[in-house]
Length: 167
Image 1: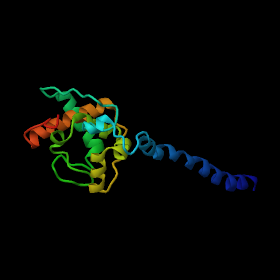
Image 2: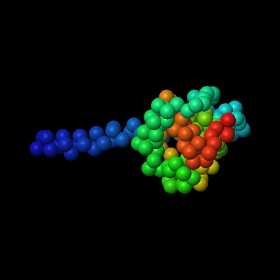
Image 3: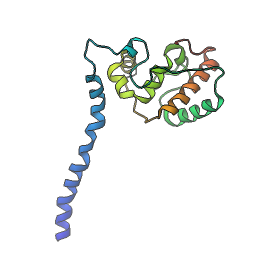
Image 4: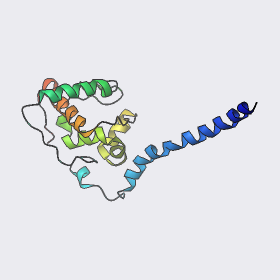
């Protein structure tokens, strides 16, 4: 009977304490948006580079085949359920021509810093309005984001016949 009482009182307490930790990730987007005032827009947004650690991304020709392969593997695992490599919108927008519409910095910031981008970047906010589904944070490392970008550049050459027109 003693063990039963401990169980009856212990389980609800455990649930209360275990559910309290979710506030930090939810507040990250709010925290990021409160860092700038309504009238102040970060310079990187004005330049079409978005919000995040990527302020300069060097792209090169020829494309790096090893990075393309790794970028495609990451895309297949984390992106393909919501995004197609054509211009077809599924849950999120299609990726065909993305390097012709968006700067490399913007693409990589959106991949790695989605909460702040959706909170502050007007282009990301417009995409959210169109797609009506918030992109989840996939916890992609900066190095992997660069490989995804290389895969997008390759995809644009294959599907759109050109790449990097947004640079």
